[in-house]
Length: 593
Image (cartoon, rainbow, N blue to C red):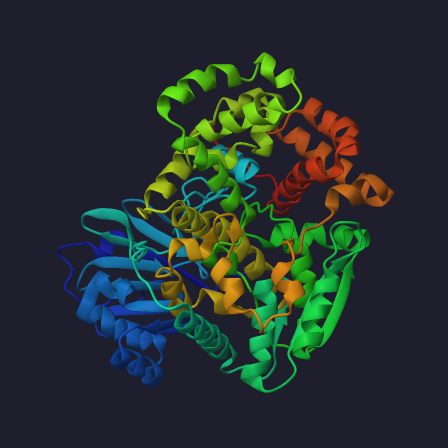
């Protein structure tokens, strides 16, 4: 796969005190948008914008690369705090003797890099970083099996890091250091009347949609039938004054198909509705290509249906798609938010009473054998697990036991506690008083930046179409951070404000439906369709020869677990299948010791 922004900077020359200040002949930047002056160069990917109106006018007049370079010369590394939008940027400055990389708040655009004493190499893709080796990081592979993706800053390639969302990298004489440029500050004391907040909310969404449409002749929308995608599809029609081209994916599998709700939204807003039902044959045709398109192993199973959705839109003449990602994570829409609030109530029980209860609620307690008390003892045990580890209490890999899943030699090279350390560090970045806001900030990293956005980005890139996220606009994000916490999660009611603010705009059936999205019935199909079953068997048995996953576990997974519970164990079969096909695309990479 080709990268869109890359570079390789000779640090020995750039940081040489004997060198006269002045731009080296080749600053090492490769991008469609590059600007230079006498001592520096700037390359940009995406659509940045300035918070300052005068700087934004300069950006429109001279273009983003030139405007960013001018601001850099005035503000240095503070530049990143002055800009928003979606972007990845790289600046090489001979006068300041430094290199500066940065990505936007949610890593809509990404940058990966490797650095040593002599050179800094970077690219928007981990597999395209100049000079990277072929060795794979075993810890990253374990992280993939744990999270079903690899959270930044680690990548699957040994020695290559990915800039986390809202971070910059500064390399100068003091070394290389990552800097958070957008602080996670929630104003939980802010109060506005509901009506004023509702009106501002609707306008911010409309403005976000309008900003994404600019410059494109035909813009379509992903339409799952949920509140987010339905809102975006409806407002896209308002902005363009034309019926919205809307694209939906269905599955001929009970419990997975949401086409009914997509049709309700399409009819309500008068969309040009296009439907496609993904089949097991589509999986056979596309799994290798989808797996190998990503720059590292990626296990979000919605990637394949999202690709088909984008492909249909591109064939229909769309040059850009709008996605509804972000609504759940800004306004409190995921069911785990209510679940964790329920667990938190346990901590209001007086400590003395908890000390009496807890010895009776261990895993081997006799109370677990009494009808009705099994759930109560489980509630106590899970409530005692501190956040954020409690969010992974039912992690699939850990439930299966890594010692029974992974090859012993591979297991010896990893730290089983590393995911917990990563989650605790991420949790600690946000100091909001309320549980809901801390969970939202946590999900901005794991759900958005490292999973859902790479899914949609990969799907649209494969289809040759651009994508925008109007619900992740800076204005709407900032607005969400000023809402009262109980407007996001009111008792156990998810995204209360979002739904109430759109009541009367969205159909009632959309507001009251439960969330599903483009979930893929892979496990169910793998037990019913012989060709797909054979494909999964071949993929996993091939993976078993690579020294990562135990052959006896693969055999047990395919012969026993999957047939018994295809919906549950199908997820493990999927992530192992995607890992195998990504590895095939890399040739024969070695896992470092």
